[in-house]
Structures are given as structure tokens and as C-alpha cells.
Length: 221
Image 1 (cartoon, one colour):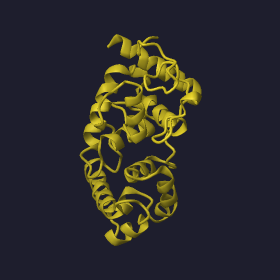
Image 2 (cartoon, helix red, strand yellow):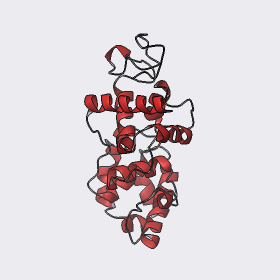
Image 3 (cartoon, helix red, strand yellow):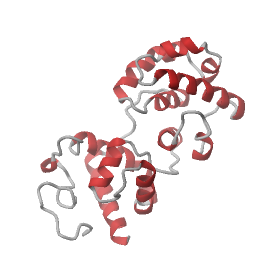
Image 4 (cartoon, rainbow, N blue to C red):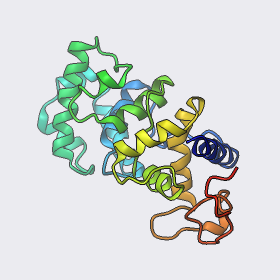
């Protein structure tokens, strides 16, 4: 485990040097807009969400507006989002709970956030990290999960198990960076269809490198 921890630290140091300190590409101006944008993002691209939200936020400016909205009107405002009917229903019910149980403020813990309809650990982790700078876990999306497995930091396909594996190996002071750095790598060179290992800053230590440059000891540092 110590070698794996050292490997994770080295990986994140290199990725930080390459990509800096990236944040979500979902456009937002406040916690309300962040919550809604992240809420709509599962099974959607960030670009798809960003095309939808400008008009949405003109019509609905607060959790109160969404809680009191006409269900069909809310559905129509997010029709371009995948699973828009389910998301509209859950978003409206979440807004009601936020108004009723949390005094209109977005909860500040995963335990409270996942009580809201339609909010899972990944969504909760992004909201906490981006909105409050709180890092209780690591948001594992398709990019993050793929990269974690290719780097040998997890062997699972289950996002929850991947998160657990990463939590054991990633330094606490780097938890907030991990997901976004892995996402940057996944979008840049470690794509699902075509790995560009020759352009990767981890090519000499990655166990999945196609260049075969690494040592037989996958966790050498």
C-alpha cells in the first residue's frame, strides 16, 4: 500500500504540473446555479448542460422558484437534457427539501446531500468540492474511473469501489484535485477510444502505457 500511495502522489504531482488546478467546466455564478448544473450533469456532457442553463436560470433564479414551479414548465426548460422528465421531478423535489429542511441553503455534507432526490455521491462530491472546498470523497465519473483503472489505482468498474480505492491511496491534501486532474487527463490523452501515450506525462510510470517504457515494478517512484 505504501508504494501505491507514493505512486498516487507522484501521479497527482505530475498532473498538477501539467494541468494546474482545474475546476468543473459547468458554468455557474453561485451555489444555486452550481447545484442545478451539477444535478443535471449525469449522463450528459458539460457542453450540453451549459447550453441549457442560461435560459433555465433566467426563468428560475432560486430554489424557491423551482420548488414552486409548474412541473411541465420545468420539464420544458430542460428538454435538451437526457432523462429530463426524471431530472425535472427530482430537481423540483430536491428544491422543496432544501427550502423546507435546510433553510434554502445547499447542504454541506455528503450525508445530507444524498438525502435529496436524484443526488448520488458523485454529484454530492462535486458540489462540496466546487462550492464549499470540502473534500469528503472523490467524484468518479467515466473519465476519472477509466484513468484510475489504467493507472493501476483500482481494478473495479464500480464507481463507489473506485472511490474507496482512491481514498486509501490519495494524499488528503490532494483529494480535491484528483477527480478534475483525472478528467483532464482522460479528455486530453487518455481517451476511451484512442490512448495517446506518447503525449502523456505519465508514460514512463503508467502500467497501461502502450510505449512499454516503464519498469517491471509498476509502483516504482
